[in-house]
Length: 230
View 1 (tube, helix red, strand yellow):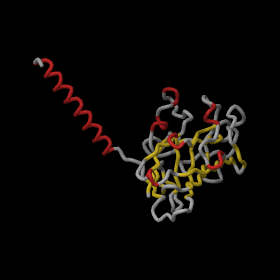
View 2: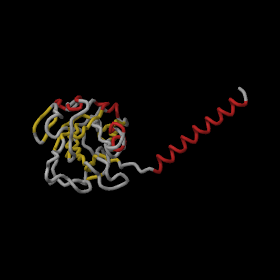
View 3: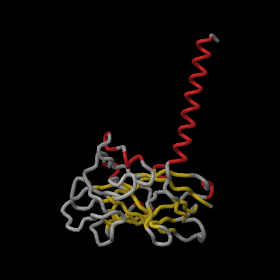
View 4: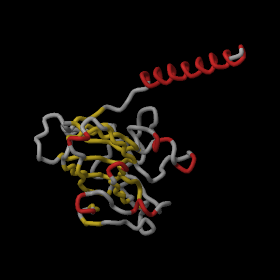
């Protein structure tokens, strides 16, 4: 290997090492959303209730205009996070209070319900398997966990609603919202320790390419992780 090639290799290794160090420092410095533990103290065979809400604008923090999910912890407090520990082989009963507006879907696939127990969900108490986003208020967001095949559309709040949420999150139950409920099973004991990504698949990142940036890429906003615990 010539002197020039050796110098190039050393430079390439230096750049790679610098990149890894920079990534590690950023990952350490940038705060991560907290993890809510639904597995601790869980009694085998009993379901877990997972209560979420979606707001059109978080109203605080480094990205106050970002659309975001929030999670209610076991103590009944709303927390700005999308990271959970859930017990293996357990029915999870999900309730999502959806306070954001909707629109037609770019991909009609995400108007259907998949992967839930019974293959259905309920919207304000009425069972459904698909939502036609071309009618009414449209679909605002989805709850989608690709690795488990779970996906549920969330109906949007009407643009004419007189009592739309206009405060920093969490939104009060008195504000206009749609309630979506469904259930799914976490994987069995063979998946303990595994982490599964979930996110919204309706582009909602304003002023980003095709709406897929900003909150769509941010953990704690429109995407998160579920870790299966024993």
